[in-house]
Structure formats: C-alpha cells, structure tokens
Length: 252
Ligand code: BJW
Ligand code: ZN
Image (cartoon, rainbow, N blue to C red; front, side, top):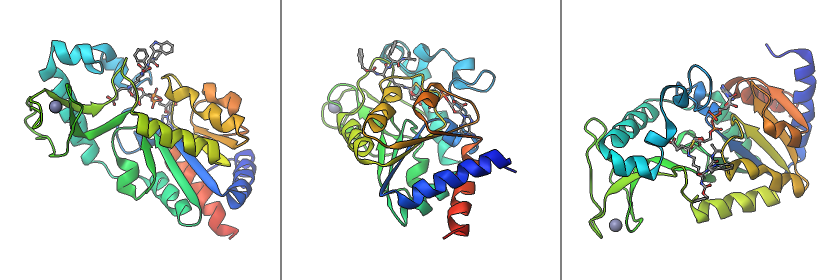
C-alpha cells in the first residue's frame, strides 16, 4: 500500500496529468526490473556487479572476442523475448489513449513497443536486430537465439553486431532528435527507473526542465535527477504507475 504523503503526491501528479497535453516517460533499466530483467548498477543483482562492462558492451570487446559478446546478447535477447510487460507499461499505454505520450527509453528490450506504446525513441539501440559494423546497415532477419554465431552483412560483407549503443559510441542521431523534440515540447516528464549515471542520456531531462515542464521522479531510490524533479514518487514502476492510473480513473 502507498502511504498517505505518497497519496497526496499522487493526487498532485494526477492534476498535472489531467492538464497535460504532451507527457514524456523517460525510462531506464528499473522499468524492466519487475519483468525479471536485471538492471546494470544495482549492487547485488545488476549486470555490472557480475560482468566488466568494457568486456561486453564496447566495440573493443567485440573486436577482441566476438563470440563471447554475441553469446551474452543472445542470452539477453532470449530473456527479453520471454518476458511480458508489467502493469506499469500498460499504464503508460492507457495514458496515451487520452493525450499525446512519447516514451524515451535507454532500454534495449523493446518492452514498451510490445506493451503498445506507439511513439518510442530508443537511445541505446535494441536487442532484436543486428547492424553492420562496417556500413551500419540494419539486418532485420532475427539472429538465431539458441546458437549465436557470427553473421555477415548482405550489402558489404562486414561483421554483423547487435544494434546496441556501446560505450564510446554515438547515440543514433534520429532517435536523439526525436527525444529532444519531445523533451522541448512536453509539459510533464516522468523519469522512471534510471540511475542517471550514463551520458549523454542522463543530461537530457534538463531540456524539459529548462522548457518549463513539471518533472516527476519514479524510483525506489533518490537519484541525481531528484534536483530537477518537483515530486519524487518513491517506489517500483510496476506499482507507482498503475496507482497513478487508478487515481486518474477514480476521479475521471
Ligand atoms: C527501479 C526499479 C523498479 C530498480 N522500478 N526503478 C565521464 C563523464 C561523462 C561521460 C563519460 C565519462 N566517461 C565516459 C563517458 C561516456 C559514457 C558514459 O556515460 N559513461 C558513464 C558510465 C560515466 N557514455 C557513452 O560512452 C555513450 N556515448 C557517448 O558518450 O558518445 C559520445 C562520444 C563518443 C566517442 C567519444 C566520446 C564521446 C554511450 C553510452 C551507451 C550505454 N550503453 C549501456 C550498455 C549497452 C546496452 C546493453 O547492453 O544493454 O546502456 S550502459 C547501460 O547503462 C545501458 C543502460 O541503457 C545505461 C543506463 O543505465 P540505467 O538504465 O540507468 O540502469 P541502472 O542499472 O544504472 O539504474 C537502474 C535504476 O533503476 C536505479 O536507479 C534503481 O534504483 C532503479 N530501479 N528497480 C523503478 N522496480
Ligand atoms: Zn555492411
């Protein structure tokens, strides 16, 4: 159960939602945690507690030992495809039925799209397709889940790699433009389940702040983004977002 002060904050946010014309949800790994997909930086359970990021999520690692990197992504792809979006994802889709909603996600699991969100900017790529290391062409034929193996580009013969933004790589320009446009035009921004540790994504919510949007932080822990936020809804995405939707429906 949400406590009373939290309920008051939920009511405040519900009023903002009622008046908002364009709502943005900016999400990170915590959004998918309740689906069973590990986050990156949590002390015991995060990927980076078990693996060295530079040995798996960098172009150098892929060049050094592609089979190990492909294996890791094949396992994660299978895991993501075996998960179902939780009630928090569905709450975002419900909210989109009555107003403009854009989702900006750092996640690569495609759960927002599978839940039914129609306007999604993917800042860090996706787990489902592969791209050519040489010419950057996207290969949409799904890689084999059980037997990861090196595949090659149909256009230029270059090595195919997961369509993921690794450390040191530029974020996809088209997705960044879509995200920036949404942040500059929204009146309400929810920042959900991200530690604010990775740039340039972590700096993006400032755009919405400077443009005058109200900002709501949804996370079990306070993060650096708290300084931008008017309200901190402390809790799990799969609890807080459905609670907010319930509140909207109760008073509709
Ligand atoms: C819940 C919850 C629940 C739990 N409900 N919430 C020094 C300063 C500034 C920048 C840099 C620097 N040194 C290097 C850089 C650049 C680097 C960077 O930012 N590094 C930092 C780590 C310091 N950035 C880059 O390299 C980026 N590119 C770039 O900068 O290009 C420009 C450039 C190019 C060339 C030269 C120079 C500049 C690219 C970054 C790519 C990030 N890729 C990853 C991994 C690959 C994807 C994959 O395999 O999946 O993307 S890193 C990893 O972190 C992943 C995530 O998208 C990203 C963000 O993590 P996120 O989502 O915030 O997860 P966590 O785990 O950190 O947090 C989870 C949160 O959820 C927590 O707050 C929990 O409390 C919460 N939570 N349960 C709600 N139920
Ligand atoms: Zn190619």
